[in-house]
Length: 321
Image (cartoon, rainbow, N blue to C red; front, side, top):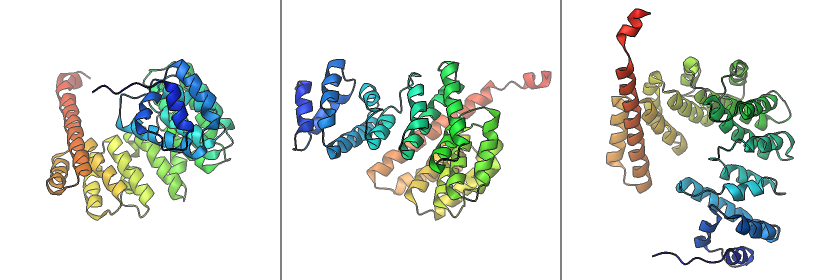
């Protein structure tokens, strides 16, 4: 049955009302038209802060669960909101937006926003555009602008959180100076800095970091173990597989366990498949079943890629070199 369409003014009135906001109205924030957006932004200052935070949290959750929704236009309008938590939510709602016109806005937020956590969020968002630039999917000007802003932030000492997020975002960059930044971060006697270095290593697509990543898989610090497991998967480190399987036998942190299982699906191997299938046989939790089935699908994809690489290899080309 097609749901009855309501005028957007009714959505705005419900947002201003003290009664619970109807969840069915969340759909009206996706692909919002200009007239509706104007109505919403006119009323936005009058919406209670708690109602704003609840709405934005629901939208963020929906964005993760439903790939067909888009809150880009609404989120853009909130990037300069007076409330820092709203500005951070706006950045997260734009996570899948590839428009390079966002780069100057994120650079401005990174360099001038009064809230350090918002500046760190902007650094993370700029990392997405560094990655797009490396793939040549955005203009080189926007790519350079994102990189230069992140390099300035990573080399500043104004706020450690912002610096660390900038280093993580620069993991996508092929700039030679980034290697030195990652090495410096990893050598620090600080768990958060080492974890950020590991995040950057995972994003680098560079197996030069194999030794550092593997060395942190059995770290006593959970943040380091989590980042190392994620990096091992992103880099596809086959040598990490035995340690990840050992980690899974001992780990009690659910987030780390999830990351380690996913890493196995990215690395591949018969023992990885055996382990994931054995978990699937014994679990009764529906969410865990869905996750394990998705991990097996990703493992199939990983192994298909490996077979393709083998088929693409021509021994005669090597002999001719």
